[in-house]
Image 1 (cartoon, rainbow, N blue to C red):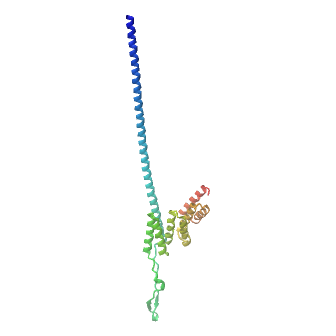
Image 2: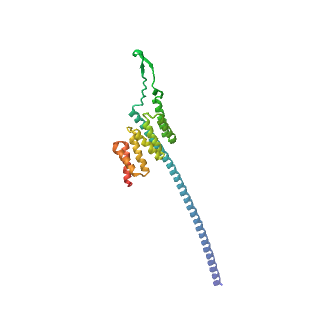
Length: 259
């Protein structure tokens, strides 16, 4: 009997041990599964946080780009305004102001050489050019150009040249008309208007700038020979000027590009 009791007890203990081992294994597997789920959740959270941070950085970069573009636009506008203002001041210094044309009316002698009645000549029927009106019309056209209202500026310069063909501002107005077409990339029209500066106002300070722009236009049109000819002419005929420096820079660019 004692041997039988011991065998039974041993069997019970082994059975309990096996059951306990099985229970521990199941519990361990459950914990592992739970831990894996936590790890997976943490990974998803990390990925979500990373995605959120990337989105924030992209938004910040977009804001920086918008600020940079706005700053660049302001700088370009200030540069254009400064250029137009300098051009206006230089023209004022070069011309010394717009002098009103003299319109003397001959006085015919009367009997015995005494002054007689004033008889205006036939040409006096044409209105004299008013310097104040010229300046106002020219400034208004320039202001339209500064504002980027290119169609209105072109119309204003054309009207100015038609009404004030003999004005001391005519060469400048002609140049800026060409500039309107140049900045809007209407190159055939720009070529025609810049050529009018060169042909119609050969003594104008704007001739060098007009020839420079002809060189630029031929460059845009890939007419390398004409571009080189115009730019070289600016360098040779107008040394020590801004136009010559810009022309030389474009010539160097042509050389680097192999044209």
